[in-house]
Image 1 (cartoon, helix red, strand yellow):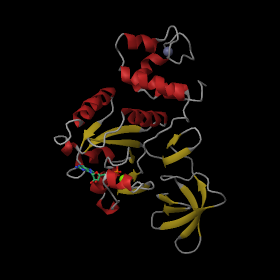
Image 2 (cartoon, helix red, strand yellow):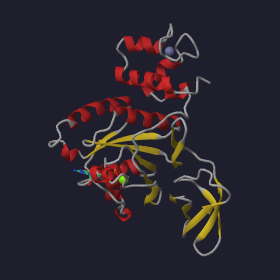
Image 3 (cartoon, helix red, strand yellow):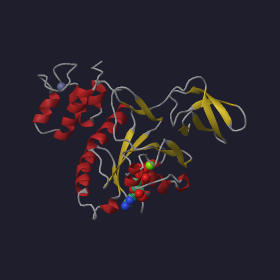
Image 4 (tube, helix red, strand yellow):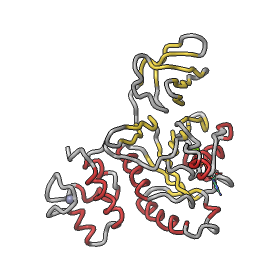
Length: 288
Ligand SMILES: Nc1nc2c(ncn2[C@@H]2O[C@H](COP(=O)(O)OP(=O)(O)O)[C@@H](O)[C@H]2O)c(=O)[nH]1
Ligand SMILES: [Mg+2]
Ligand SMILES: [Zn+2]
């Protein structure tokens, strides 16, 4: 399934694109899903089954879930020199990728604007830490040259994610010119009260690589995770997680907590630990 337009879904087979509806009530079909369809009139069909997913990238706030893409193998989180985004949004997406067993790539776009926006230097510095954690980090200028991404895309189903205006669609167009996704200045897009990219859509890069462009988001709830999955999402915490005195340690203030001990010994980044503490207190699902 390459795209959803309200109640209509565009489904691609080897030779044809079908415009489909879902039998019965619309039950969470999402971009990237593998589906079985029953073709009806010319070019149309009914989605009968959604096949099991290898991964599901979605966000979950208290009262709603928003599916973003299924079966992706790689998260490409895009940030920019401007508009800057909170590192917490990056952390949240990395956690979901870790939970789903998806690899992550961090792309810092609009590097050409660094001279114009010296405050972007802080973004560059902050991201070096993620490279130390083991996440590949690429600095690009989608408007000038995005080819350095190519080796990273080959063989992957990549999801472009990140805040609006960072250049996700521009990056996609640079790599897949036939995509012709609309792009816009953040001010234009936000002034008119809507995002330029309104729904996720899958594009083929080559025979076994594709990219999904998605609308930007500011908010990214993690209510789908339990506390253990949340802690696991911080890759640098992993060596400590099964060392604590209590099996169900939440690593907040428990005695014998090896994670807190490591933090005290300066082995952990304090911003990431503070981020974990903020998130764990907002999680509804306890340790299971
Ligand atoms: N200077 C500069 N501007 C860029 C670059 N990439 C994207 N932009 C601009 O940033 C704005 C937002 O881009 P868009 O692709 O719509 O962002 P999206 O919301 O993440 O899809 C557009 O005006 C683009 O022309 C870049 O590498 N350098
Ligand atoms: Mg876009
Ligand atoms: Zn602990």
